[in-house]
Amino acid sequence: MPFTQISLRKGKSLEYRRELMEEVYLAMRESINIPENDRFAIVTELEDGNFNNSGAYLGISRTEDIVYIQITLNTGRTTDQKKQLYAKIAERLSTNLCIRKEDVVISLIEVSPQDWSLGNGEAQYA
Image (cartoon, rainbow, N blue to C red; front, side, top):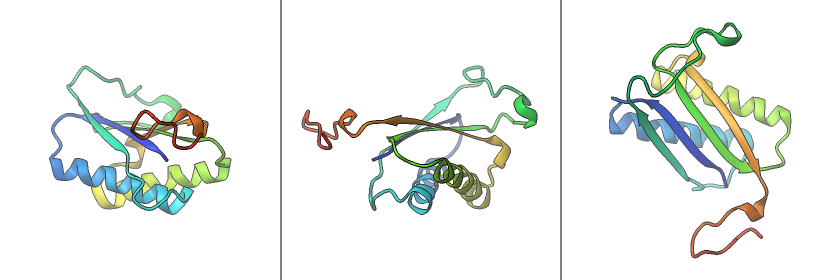
């Protein structure tokens, strides 16, 4: 049950933001086998001056069109699965939304199943 938070520069259309969430979801389906219709995501738009893209950190030249993707998910994926996820997200965003791969920054936060409540004040996976 991943929860995806996407942050980007303000000004993109509603359609673009929806497609962004969809492409990340599809990449997760293809690479880490999340369940069908497991779609929990938000997009946050940031005004200029409210983010820092770290310039060319690690030799990667980023632009102001950087997209930050943070995914909270259950622990247990292998390093290879995570690498596949990163590559698949970057590939889908580049191909379908013309986002430069250099502008896709992804981080994962791993939690235990009992760390989720999906409504009703219950721990459904505990």
